[in-house]
Length: 297
Image 1 (cartoon, rainbow, N blue to C red):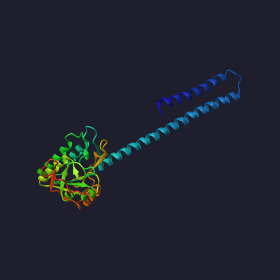
Image 2 (image 1 turned 120 degrees about the vertical axis):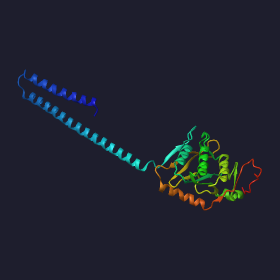
Image 3 (image 1 turned 180 degrees about the vertical axis):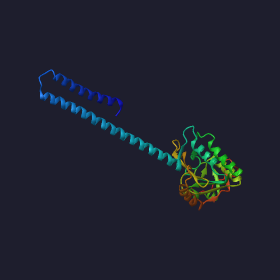
Image 4 (image 1 turned 45 degrees about the vertical axis):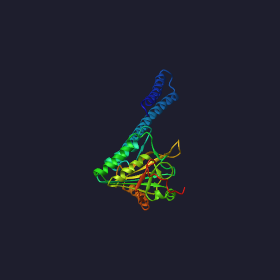
């Protein structure tokens, strides 16, 4: 009970007692009446008893509130201790407009990895192909910074092995014989990738320690492994303009090391690797050898 309410109740009880005492004093001035005196005594007894009960109940409530606060503090301490031990199992990093939190989070996780850690990425392109498979437009240089950090890490030995598997629906692969044989194209339509990734793939093919593959999709999204105990997956939304998919952020599993979670995603990697084919050429639309694809669409 708050202080104001308590004072009101105290005042009410004091008023009752004072009124009863006033009546008792007035009774001395009149002829003795046992009924009047009995009523006065009863009123005083009720007031005193009510006040005693009120104080007892108030003390009980105060004690209960104190116990609840103590329990809440104890629970909060246990939660804090538990979070210190297990960390944050997953973090959602959302690419808001003008913000590239997802790419920045990936970049920081790569930089924080142990020297010599491997990096493996599975990236899926749907039936819309490279023309609509976009990351957020307002990511600035964050995405290119991730690509640069990966290649520099391989060249300097900070990253042991860098592997990227570009995945398409199985019917897209079987309908495009060039793609199925390891020829990757930049452009529009099924079986293509977008330009920024194409340029990065070309650099990968020139860099020792990097490997590039195509494979049928097992998981329709992005899954990337950083070392032995870190993994992140993409969070994708539908584009309002084209209806295509847009990677709007990531869920990062890296604080603390999540061996069990990583193991579950490793199954996706192993299943994808069973049917992957090495890429031996990346072709852009302006290339002189950009011949029409052999496709049965």
